[in-house]
Image (cartoon, one colour):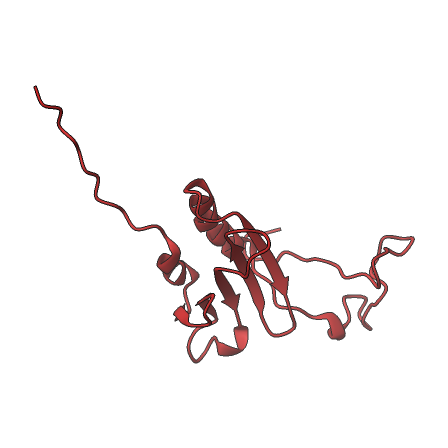
Length: 140
């Protein structure tokens, strides 16, 4: 498996797996049915996203995440608390790749913070900004 291959998840009918452990629906070529084709993040893209996520978790800003893979787009949602609405959504929409870029970061309010073709550039909007450290001198 190379870094550019998408991470494959299989879908199963209902909440139970079939006895053989294989998905219940197969296409004519033996692969997944076109009914279940989904957009997913590649391993490299997921590594970039999880790097930013790890920094924010270490800073205490973010607590949870969810990954949704749908027919038209893949979404990585970030939460401050598990029961909240997502603070940010990192979306991959291949249909927009030629126009505005396949990747975008969307705030909780629905505003698009950054959009582009390069995920690294798009994720910079989420990276913590360096703060100016103040040094207190003790009186001697």
